Every structure is written in structure tokens, then in C-alpha cells.
Image (cartoon, rainbow, N blue to C red; front, side, top):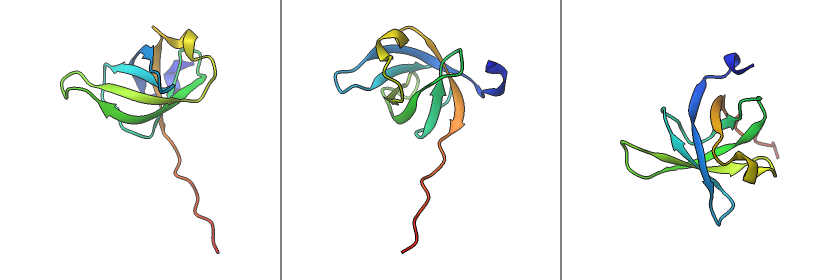
Length: 89
């Protein structure tokens, strides 16, 4: 099931007080990218990249309520989020 995803992005390190997940990145990632767990369930969307360039971390806005169970889990890229559609007036 993981084969259709781009690849492993990193590992969830912890849940920040702000409610965001902090992911230690093992490969290149971009803000707006959707992350999934090994079973293909959405984990969250990368909000920003933080830390040193050689060893970056990602701040991820969760898309699930089971965030405590995700600590220590590997996460994978499911591609970029689709931009919101503009409504006509």
C-alpha cells in the first residue's frame, strides 16, 4: 500500500504544546505536503520547516485526533495538498 506514496519523509518525534506534530525529516519535504502513516491514513499537512538546514524538522498540522499514538511512527509523503478553489463573485 505504501508503494503509491512518494517515500518515507521522516519520524514523528513528539506532539508540541501548540497541538502540532514535530517530525524529524530524513528526506526533502515542502510546506503543504500531506503526510500519511504506514497504513495510508492521513497524519497531517506540513505547515513549516524548522531547525538547521542539514537536519531539518517539520511542524505538521494534524488531520487526525490520534496524535498521541503517532509518536515514534514513520511518516510518508502522499504528495502536495490541492490548493483551495477560488469562488466567483
